Length: 142
Length: 200
Image 1 (cartoon, one colour):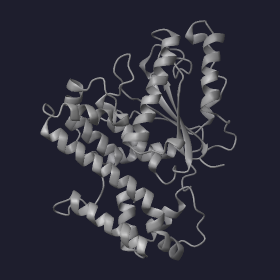
Image 2: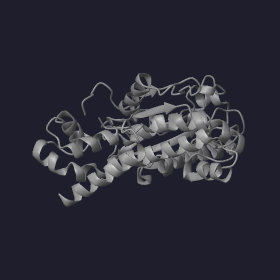
Image 3: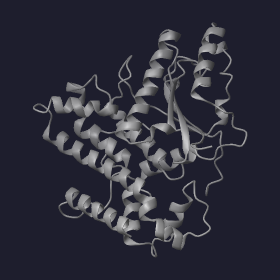
């Protein structure tokens, strides 16, 4: 329970930091994050970073190196996309800890693997704890 | 496990060229694409051949040395890739380079969404790069490896896919999609194959 409380706390802090209005309850999909980067930073990338690739932090490094020229919108949206990707990945990795008690209570007899436990937890969302439900939402698995 | 309609061997030729310029946050169409990717990559057939990155790389090399005739007369790669659960995606690269163009960032993200899906999380995948027959076979082999590597790097770093789940192989022009039109752009593609469970 201690661990669960800690994770929930960390999640709430992340949520509070990322959304001033509290409107951003959901993380973006990775597809949406990629589209956001392309839309807001595409022109700057083509202009200043034509030889940098998406992986390995090279695009970010190049945009940082050209910070004085890169548009404010690109800087802001890059940070938003990066934070959302990190939050979603963290939720996916935390899910079995956060939802362990719920799975034991609600998903007895479900064979783990192939997404079976997540399907069970999503189906049982009305009985699932708030922390587990939030983590499933943040993970993009609803 | 819910969908048994789509079995291994399915080739979902997805034109995932998601137009960035006008697109507001894409919703329905993208969700469908993601579902299609997941479906295309699940349900490994019982008779699926065992494919490793090393065997695939070797098969491409052997193919290039053994068959020197015109592309339309070369037999397909000996490894029966069509038996594996797979998807084809179009990713736009800079000309003669492994730099992924921003217009394809969303497509890479869609692949990441699918690979992060709980249904696919326990599986390993091989990413292959393919070219058409313009340019020399040797250069095509090298360029396609670099492009497959670039896709792998973007997935494992920017989009946090576990590197233990992915390998990249350049097939050059050795595994044409359209053998009758070897210079057709449909041959320039990235494929993703499900090669079985992560832990055996």
